[in-house]
Image 1 (cartoon, rainbow, N blue to C red):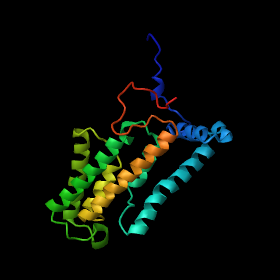
Image 2 (cartoon, rainbow, N blue to C red):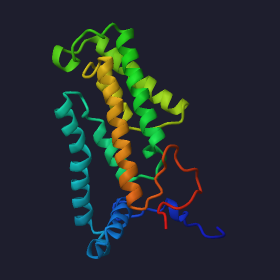
Image 3 (tube, rainbow, N blue to C red):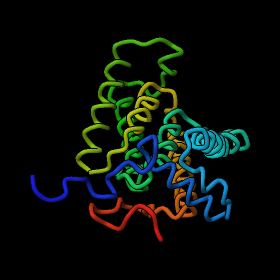
Length: 218
């Protein structure tokens, strides 16, 4: 073997838990001029505390909006999306295009499955019981979501949960689905603000092409 076989700097783990959270925390600490936090940004205890606080803030804001408006601004698949946005923000799956596009595909596939199996007026499967039509709708929605995310090149794993939320009837009204997508857009906006504040080269829409500038803006 000739040459340097090490992977490029951008592909190496950037923290002790093989994500970019340490880089995000270091950038925020420098931005806020918190020298002691910057020195300890890669310690597991500090990273865990940052993840704890960040999770409370990101999802807590959505929950507060949901309480204030009575609309479903909070749903399970927002959790893994939030973790992606702040754990591996420079990965393609965490980009705004993939996040919004993936969830939109999940919503459309889930609702189409409800229509195909005549379930748009039926209650949530977990409340009224699961029958073969629910099985078909769930399978169809997940298959369509997985395939469409590949066809449109917008893979975003949490969208697989979103489509099941819809195809199982947990959120099925068009107005609820519109709010769901608004919540996704709000979370993406949080991701842009926090990652850019940290100096992370987080994209405003499409993921960075391979070999683009490093993860942190200088």
